[in-house]
Length: 170
Image (tube, rainbow, N blue to C red; front, side):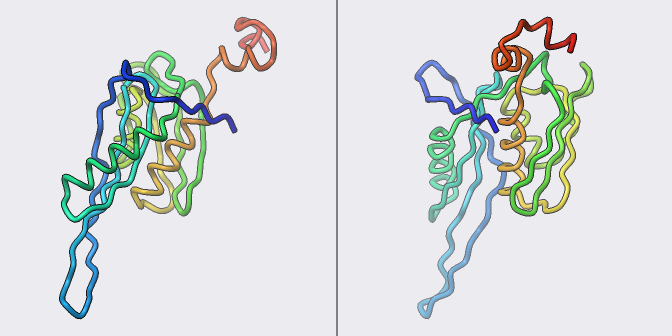
C-alpha cells in the first residue's frame, strides 16, 4: 500500500468542501448541551486531497477546526486525463467503495460523500459505487484509501526499473 503524504506549502491553494454536519446532544441534569461535528474535505483540484473532523459548540467553529485538521493529512493522488489510472476497491469500517476509470465526458458518477472527495481531488470523469454502510465518515475514509492506493504508469515504471512504454507492452 503506497501512501503518498504531502507537506502543506504556502503555494498550494486548497478549497474546502463540507461533507456532513452532525448535531450531537449531551443530556445532563442541567439540561441539554448541543455541539456540532463537521467532516470536511480539502483539495487543490489537481491531485491533492485531505479530510478532517472538527467538533465545536458552533457550526462555523466546527467547520474551521475540520479544515485545519484536513490540512494536516494531505495525500497525493495520480489523476490521468481527468480520471483515475485504474480500478480500485477499498474498505473502511462498514463502507466499501469501488472506483473505476471512465471515458471523457462521463462526469462524476458517484453519490454523496464520495462525490465531494472526487470533486476536490480534481477528477472529472469516474464511475464509483459505494457498498455497505452509507456513513459519510467511513465513506470519505474508504474513498481516500482507494485513491491513495492508485499508481500511474510513471510510478509503476520507476518501481520496476523499466521505461513507461514497456509498462503498457507487458
